[in-house]
Length: 124
Image 1 (cartoon, rainbow, N blue to C red):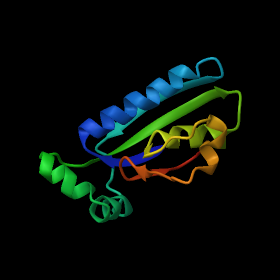
Image 2 (spheres, rainbow, N blue to C red; image 1 turned 90 degrees about the vertical axis):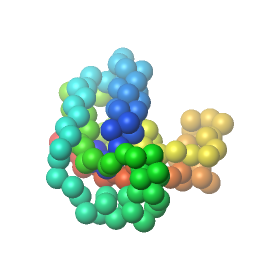
Image 3 (cartoon, one colour; image 1 turned 180 degrees about the horizontal axis):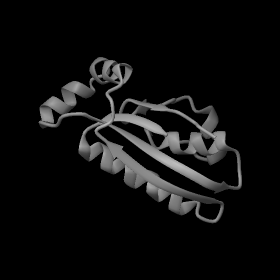
Image 4 (cartoon, helix red, strand yellow; image 1 turned 120 degrees about the vertical axis):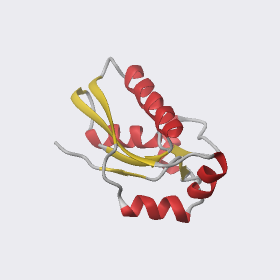
């Protein structure tokens, strides 16, 4: 479960990217994607929204942030849940420089910046 604070446009883009990632892994993954809006506001996400310039960008474009929860309900995965979580989390990060090979994804000099403020909660 990923809790995010984003504009509707950002949320829709992220959900599309997560859905695309799940589709690409259909041979090894069976999962349902659910998006809930109108969830409780997380004060730590609001702090990140303010402190890292998201608020200014949204105000300049006339958009208001909304809390949302993106739930990926995994019923089958031929791999570790931590690896899957890392792959989905990567959708929420923007990097200036991508690694030449996937193997080096874990050892990037560029840890990236969040697309939006987010938290992840893993439940068995």
